[in-house]
Length: 302
Image 1 (spheres, helix red, strand yellow):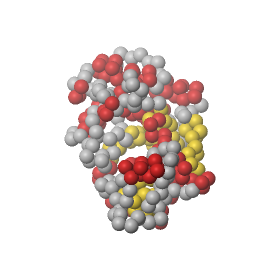
Image 2: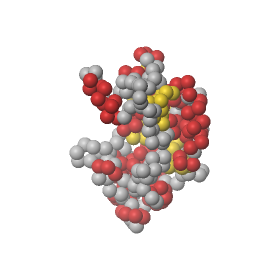
Image 3: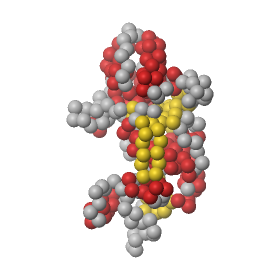
Image 4: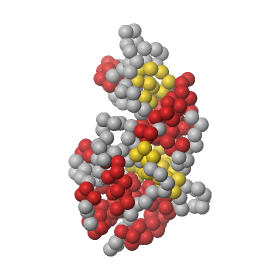
């Protein structure tokens, strides 16, 4: 990318709890990448899964970002205010969608009966119509078979990624059984609407990218560039998250500037490969921006 061409990046957390080191790493990488490319950095709250949302967590996330010196451009977008846009996308995809009656247990059981190696790939039970006596639960997107479903792209951090949707993913859900629009569709619609050119996020989402690229093509949306940074793990090797015991670093908004630097910003920077030292938060960002640029150049990912 020309460093002076328009760049729009984003950070899109779910309000399921406070920011922790793992989510801060993703936020920091996306922020640094946007700013070193003289671009805009947007924040989007992905709050469609209401059962998992924690009351007040969205505002706490935003406050923690600001206390860490990360200030977004423009207005924050909440996905819960954009339901009509997702329904419009579903209508556009109508020729590629079919109703599915399968529960997760039924899918796993059918794979086992077929002696399949993986329970992750949908076996196509409802692809040609609902089984007799079954009621539709979710909506699935039919993916191309064989090489027609091969998606490949060059990730700026991870390198070449290839995935054959038919054999490695299968037809995937775009509206869940509870009526909630699936992440894969919502994120594509929103990135397109916001003009996002570059997506920087954790490598745990690398496997989702081929599905999103396929949806972008079906909806005639441009394909962004991707950069997937490594994810922080706990002592057991699990991705650091609220579910695996990740602790917030902002202590309910009461952490001092030094505490934020020593327990959050500097460790996150070190995890990304940036060797920094700073006495205050503004100094941290002044040093982090050229350090990120130099890191990308060394990796050939600028």
